[in-house]
Amino acid sequence: MTQIPMERKVLGENDRIAAALREEFHRRGIFCLNLISSPGAGKTLLLEKTLEGFAPDRRVAVLTGDIQTDNDARRLARYGFPVQQITTAGACHLDARMIERHLANWDLSTIGLLLIENVGNLVCPTSYDLGEDAKVVILSVAEGDDKPLKYPGIFHRAELLVLSKIDLLPYVPFDIAAARDNARKVNPAIEIVELSSTTGAGLDAWRAWLDRRAVH
Amino acid sequence: MHELSIAQSVVEAVEKELESQPGALLRKIGLRIGELSGVDPDSLRFSWECLTRETGFEGVALVIETRAWQRRCPPCDIVFAVSDYQTVCPQCGTRETEHAGGNELDIAYLELETP
Image (cartoon, rainbow over all chains, first blue to last red; front, side):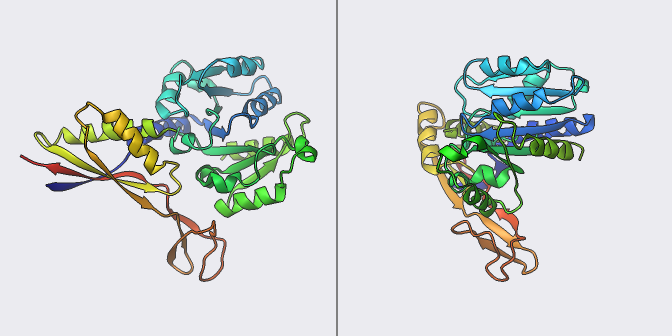
């Protein structure tokens, strides 16, 4: 019996495609975000509010992932910017090849900001690099304030935590200080924005983060 | 539950590697999985068995080494395992520690029977 060292990443092929995408995004000056949350945390509504606030000449495009249906793409297309649905037909995450394939349909010279809405899931999307500049994790106050501890992988890798649906705080037992503290335990450097896409509270802070981060 | 996709990626990467080992019989695959990788070793083993049944990889053992979440404290020049989410340096107490391990999802080695 011979043991031969292999020392390869299991997702090396995904990482290779993601690295090529990242290089192309940087060459073209495209800033790319990968939005990750559990199902129903408010990714699509946040994107709708984000697109609604952009000037019509903003060079933004959205890829939205779901296991089935193009409902989200139809919701997002109303704002006049390019949107494509990625239907994974069962897969619980997006991978770099899906991004590469869908981007082939677009003229990338018209895009400055690429927003990717991942499939609703806090575990699986964490492993797959999509070539993004940053991962954003969204946690709604209708969930548990201990989620950063239960799903440390994504909170560890995210640059920004969006605490969403804060208009519901009077009706739910969510402890926002505990949630912030738990997120910082897992990732001391994580930035945090609190907002409600329904009332608009905190959206300015999200837009400010986006504008500040996108120019770097 | 993306362990099935992960198992598929292991098959593809190992198949590629075996192209340079003609005639060799694969017996074991050594994997390294970090605590923060989001991959559950038990469900990966289960996925592996389902995926490789009645294929050339049937019966190949997955040997999984799990890796702890680790951080480094640059001033103290130490690496420590994070337990109970304590990312502060146990020696000097600074919060300014850096990631040092736990995201691993690697194929470390193959064990082959060579002709």
